Structures are given as structure tokens and as C-alpha cells.
Amino acid sequence: MSSEVFFTSMKTKRGESLLTKLEHLIVRAGLLETISPKDLVAIKLHFGERGNLAYVRPQYVRRLVEQVKKKGGRPFLTDSNTLYAGSRSNAVDHIETAIENGFDYSVVGAPLVIADGLNGKDYVSVPVNLKHFKEVKIGSAAVQADVLFAITHFKGHEATGFGGTLKNLGMGLGSRAGKQQQHSDLLPQVNEEICIACGKCAKWCPADAIVVEGKAKISQEKCIGCGECTVTCPVRAIAINWKTEADMIQEKIAEYTAGVLKGKEGKTGFITFVTDVSPLCDCCGWNDVPIVGDIGILASKDPIAIDQAAVDLINKAHGNPLSELGERHNEHDKFRVLFPNVDWTIQLSYGELIGLGSREYQLIKID
Image 1 (cartoon, rainbow, N blue to C red):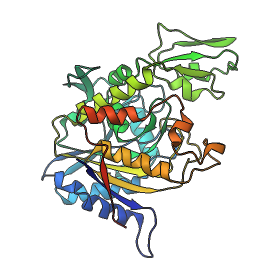
Image 2: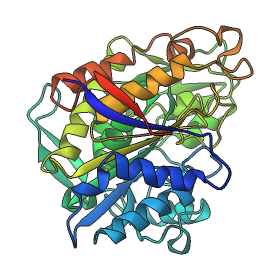
Image 3: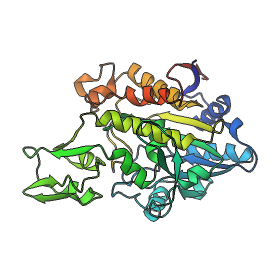
């Protein structure tokens, strides 16, 4: 059975703003029907790493906040702390970074609550009884909320092909320990012929597993497999030993998503911005040239369908030859061009298998 995915393009008419179009999209998708008076409404988003500018603009978030309040809900913005040593690995730095990036109460109209607490230890173990996990560690604020909305910026990702709603929920709301569980099968290795011994990988390693003595060396005993060094290395000397790990991390993310959504049947909604589609995750302290032009905004009650629709829209769009796609910008599967060793379909097919939603969808345009 196909799911409904609602779509509005970025094209506007005189006197009509994108903020107004977003409001119409949310209403048409029926997302506000999930809210009862006094509900605590978690709005999951990525506040953006310090230095990254591809995240969803806070003015969009405010429009959702305003609509939630009109329905009698009590909204708060949330995310869990990161595993890697960036600007969001604890609640203090996380909130400061969010405010610097524009997610202040005066702008968005809602408080910021870091889902897994001050240092990532505030989580709830949620039973899922699936292939990889019997239970998953989810940030407690997300579990305790009555309603959950996810606002997602769709982009590429080196471990999963793309980062969409599933990754925003599963990896994003996993506690720091939960993130380690999901990443634990990824084992990076250093190509010493390419390594320039700059030391950036060691600086960003959250486990102190890298030493630089002529060349970077990774301790397999200390390594937690977070993959941060792979996106930090300026010369791509550190690659992940994929084997089956790329498949496993996608399945693990889907299982964590199942934990996030458990107990919230009929009380969730998903909004995806297919804009500034950068080649890498917003967790990087930078963002590169988008691989396609801005396409539009999607809304759905099905997390699988909305990710599938976003991928399809991107693959149908004209690729940007000035981006990482380069001369291969006209190829159909743009994320396979970026990450040829990653089969991004696994997260969707496995998510469908465990009951998260359907890859079959009906795209309903509201322009």
C-alpha cells in the first residue's frame, strides 16, 4: 500500500513566501492532526555544526512552532549530543552552537532541550527485539514527548549514502552510547602513502585512538568506529573498511528509528527540506557546493516514503558539475557517484521490512 508524500517546490508567486508555502504543506499533510491540547511536542532537527551553513533555517522551524502552539501543543526543539568531538558533544556546547546558528527562543519561539542530557547519559532503553538490538538507547526527552516531528535536511552521507529522516531519527536521537552502538562496526584504516601527517584526525578523534608519528596510526583496540576521521582528513587518506559494515549501520539506524517511534503511533510527522543538498552530513564543520539545485519541501506521516521520495527527486534533477559529482553529474544515482561502495537502498528496504513504512508512495504536489 502506497503512502502519501506531499510536496511543494521552492518557486513562489508575488506576495507568497516560502514560509507560507511551508504552512500550507504542513496543514495539507495532516501533521497537526496528531496534536492534542497540552501535548509535549518534540521537534527533532539538526542545529548544524559550528561552521556549517547547510542546516534548515530557523525561520522555517518557527512556522511549525507557531502552528503547534495554535493547536494547543507545547513545542520544544531537540537533538541528542554527538559522539565525535565537535561543537555539540555536550549540552552546554550544543545549546551554544544552536543559538549561534539562530535557534534562539527569540527567533524560533520554543525552548531547546538536549534529548540525552548534559553529557549523553540521560537516555531510556527501549525494547525493539530486532536483528541487531534487543533494546536501543534513546534520548529521554524524545521518549517522554507525546508527539514527535522531525525536520530533516536531506544530504549525502559517507556511511549511509544519504542522510534523511531515518538517520535524523535513528542516529540523531540515539544517545551517545547509542551512537557508538550504531557505529561500532565501522573500522577506518590509514593509507600511509597518502597521509600527510597533519594531525587533524587525531584532534577530532573522540576516543584518542589516533597518534601521529610520521604517519597517522589508528589503535584498533581504542577505535570506536565513529568515522569522524574519514570526513576530517583533508586528503582522504583514511577510508572505512566497509565489508558488510555499510549494510549493518543502515540496518542499525532503522532499528534505532523503530525505538524512537515506538509508542507514538499516530503521533508523528516528518518534514524534509531537499535544499542545499550538500555531499556530506551537517555534522561537518563546513558544507560544500550542493550536488543539485534547490528542489522543494516534503511532508508525510511515513518516514520511509519521504526518504524514498527525496532520493527520487534528487536523482531526477540535473546534477551540478561544479559539485563533488564533477563530470559524472548526469548519472542517475547521484549518491552512488559520491559513495560507490554504499548501497543506500538498504536502510529503506530494511526499514520497510521491520514495519517503519512503505517505499511505495504517491507524490501529491500542492503548488
